[in-house]
Picture (cartoon, one colour):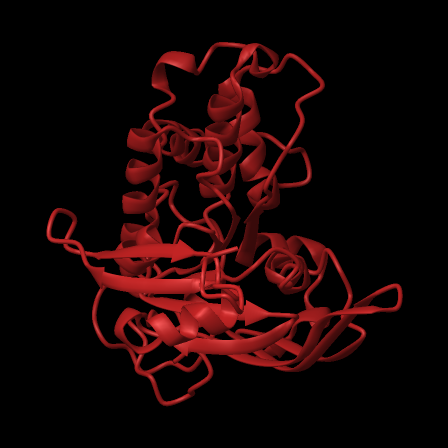
Length: 304
């Protein structure tokens, strides 16, 4: 489970992963496939966050290991997106601690943090008519010197991200002329071009069509299996069951469950988390699972 510290991750030395210019590849090399012995890259302990009087995150304890793709799931308002913001220091905890690669998150200067952690937000507005290629290249800013000049490796990292997200035909098009789904893929490509060992993705498939969503989820899984740590917020439980290594359920800011598909994706757990009747069964077509919900019955026995 995500909370356990004895799970052997598939990655190598976090210090090697976080250092320097990464050679321009989106997949990078963050330990590769296999059973590394390093501990968690992110550790959350007794984490609280208040939004006004409301406690959005409540006494949360979690470990996230490299070489794994974690999906954060749960009802609206459970604290999923807030947790991502806390993990990249967009928000400050009310209490508790977050460690990144063995050091306090607060001990990282902004440039160092941006070379370790990248966030793809749920939405991002483009107000200027930069081309797709120019926006994706902005992901390389944490790696540039004082003059901000792109080198060959930076350009190659951006082009690789553009190819991975299927944006080649749109590379010279202004981002202000894109559809919502196309713009979301640009944001994701910019995040990949940042070439960080940790990726935080907030509902990355929400505006994508079916084929694009499946392609992105495959890329995300590959990035994790190449040694990165990927944490994704998603409401698509069937996709999570297929493409995630572990699923973390939050409810009312608290940890409801964390573990592999067979551990946590059960009728009882889904009913508890989502307060609806649930059925989970095998899906022979995808090799994953099929998840169905319906309203809980009224006292008279009929669904509401």
